[in-house]
Image 1: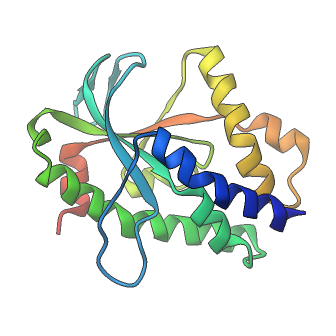
Image 2: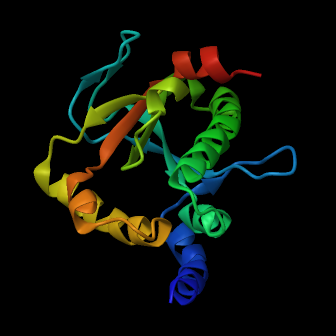
Length: 185
């Protein structure tokens, strides 16, 4: 059953990609980048990051999206949840330098304050340089939880409903200064 759902997902993914205005990052080396990105205006509540960067409504950020179809395809043969978490961690770590390079070379670079993502996979994010911030709008939080539910069900075979219900989506932020400090070149 999972195989069929993944096949359908892989078929629908290019359509989602087209309508979401996401961009694939050019990549060096054997593995491609796990992120698809787009420059966007932030619409959440104001946030002050630990390095003093203020993210306000309508500030320009690079929104990062995990390429879930690709990720699920690569995770399908990994049985251990710990090995899956390590795989995702290292994939994100190897992909962030290309995000930094994209921002540095972007014609809007001087306006971009940072990167933002939304995820339910927030363990270990701080070690990657992200700051985890709660989503304050309960309707938007519920919408994102519901949107992530199929991914969670496909990624983890033995997750109980209690665990799924207890997980919540969060914003992940990183300022462009911190991104450059950690991942430049």
